[in-house]
Image 1 (cartoon, rainbow, N blue to C red):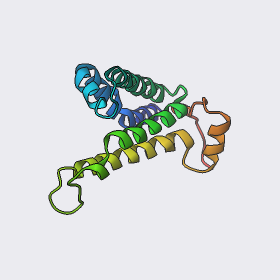
Image 2 (image 1 turned 90 degrees about the horizontal axis):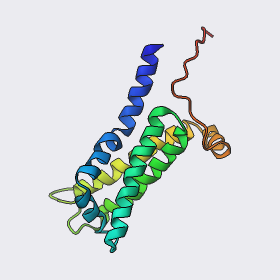
Image 3 (image 1 turned 90 degrees about the vertical axis):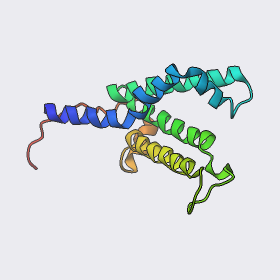
Length: 158
């Protein structure tokens, strides 16, 4: 039973580890650099700072919700959207002048970063909606419901 709880928590830690602690800590330690990067997409410096602070709040708050299991399905949906939005705004490999899949290309890294964000969004969507079609309806009716990640039942053999 203890092993099951540890594994369940460890899997969730792996899922959110990009955001909490790493990306969140990077935003705190390098706030001005993060704002400068955001300012590449929005012309207003104050708006760029608000976006970085909002991203920090999403990364910390939604990761904490996923780790705790409190409204974790909604938190996973929000992080999925966050991953997709950041991929579309900051991983625009299609705009890079030297992008190509074969041969030398400095912007090919953006291509892989884009698809890593998309794949991570898929992982969060599985957590939010479940592994099958019934989860979509369940989420639509009860979006704040927890997935109860740490509930252990003692089921006997079938």
